[in-house]
Image (cartoon, rainbow, N blue to C red; front, side):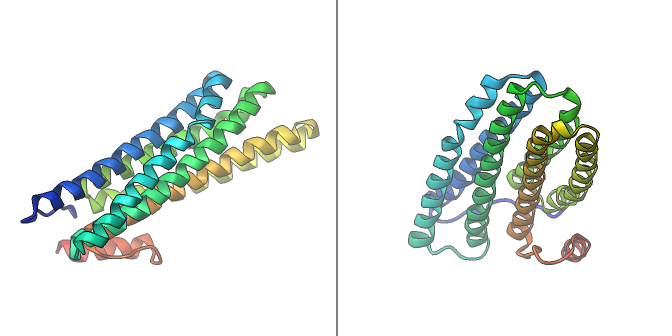
Length: 240
């Protein structure tokens, strides 16, 4: 299994600083997961008040990003980290950017959900959105778990799921377009659902990005611009 753990240092304070930013990333990820779960719950149960609450809560995610980013800057300035420590700090700065963007998408979806509930749209409009939402939420959770365990193999497996999310998006959009063709009066409402679908797909993209950062952290290989199949070959070569 391509996984590792944080190195230890002569200066124990440095160990504490690295562990602190790692812990804060997981706390930020947990908050973003919670927001997404509440949005899905609001849509599933028609709870507009819950959706509005999440739409107003993105500042908490932003505060996490600012705090962690400042801590990473301090480490770079004072500790001049090298090798794996530097990769950890750089990976963290990229991961928190993706988490902040997931938070933005969750806020956007929450506002759409509140509008959809107010307009009392047919439940059939939401089936694809909910399915995609639960999928990308699992991806996000598993990506953060791979980061916590520093498991590159798990990260690669999760990254591959983004293709399935893309297929789910295509199927859902086709169904929504059918609704608009059958009833032109539904166009405005269905367009709002389409915006939510696309936001869900972007969350899947961000989860994949986090997985790519985990792989970079563990094996020192940037796989952003190579195929997942080539990335898998890289991992197998390292394990041998």
